Length: 104
Image (cartoon, rainbow, N blue to C red; front, side, top):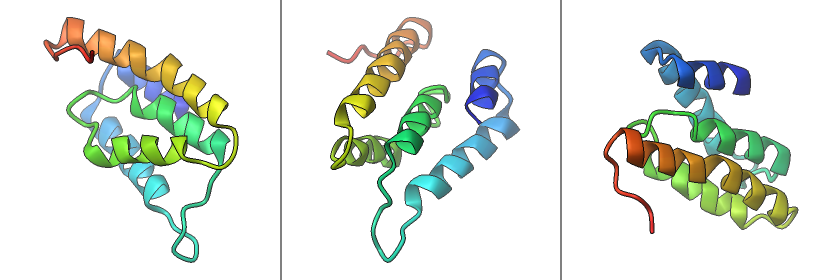
């Protein structure tokens, strides 16, 4: 899925973007016995994929997911590293190429 998201970011297809977004939403919304399953590997991949989506697709629920991923009991450094690698280029690219205000 990460590979597909990377290819779609380079050459966007609205149907593929929609499918990727729906898969992300299914995973981040999944609960087992009412609780989120903590898996820093899955969280890391999802973070990378979220920030490969067009800015207009990224919603509040995705940002809430980032917060929850950061509040995990295990391997916060790994998650923080993925956010650093994925989010900062996303915001920088979006602000330069799509007239979105820079995050300060």
